[in-house]
Length: 236
Ligand SMILES: NC(=O)c1ccc[n+]([C@@H]2O[C@H](COP(=O)([O-])OP(=O)(O)OC[C@H]3O[C@@H](n4cnc5c(N)ncnc54)[C@H](OP(=O)(O)O)[C@@H]3O)[C@@H](O)[C@H]2O)c1
Image: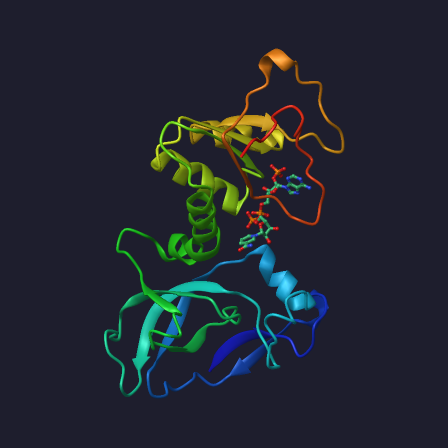
């Protein structure tokens, strides 16, 4: 048997339940993956609450979770390029809060990526959403070597990935807003932390203001920015 976390209608975490299910059999073009690690993201509760129902209508019962990493334990007919024992990263369609899943290997499904050897399952499972979003954001702003970047919400999953990828892309300086408890972590990555002003704009002397070339917002979008936009004005 296997286990999955499911919900039968949109709502709060009270809708979630654990279901015992048979281990799936792989259909044509599918493999069955046993997950070793599952990524947990803010989008999971947004999907559960129905915020994305217009764009992403779910057949019920549905499951939360859009990323995971694990091992291929069964291979269906007509599968090319995947073998039992392969380590893979699953991303995309909701439903990864489970132990076993039958996953399409068809290129158009774009659900599986081979897992690089150097990653643990835990590291690989959280790459698609946080690191994928960070990479995409930096590519969209077109950060170039030598530039200064402000990352709003730098201590979260997307923010931490943005800071690290920005340096890999050659950023000269990365300023990150975050709560004080996360400042040492940001310093350890080479970023300059700035206290998030909770509900107010701090008095930041004009002489100390730094103007970044680009800003990546990696903080929740429905809450007003708590950082001092006037203190560190974004221009890009
Ligand atoms: N559009 C997309 O494709 C996409 C993809 C991934 C994520 N997202 C969204 O991006 C946001 C961040 O995701 P995440 O996975 O990085 O979340 P996370 O790990 O929870 O990190 C969010 C960070 O934002 C900071 N924060 C929380 N409330 C804030 C506020 N009101 N003002 C300023 N900072 C605040 C927190 O830092 P401190 O505690 O240090 O203040 C926290 O570390 C979420 O809203 C998520 O849904 C969008």
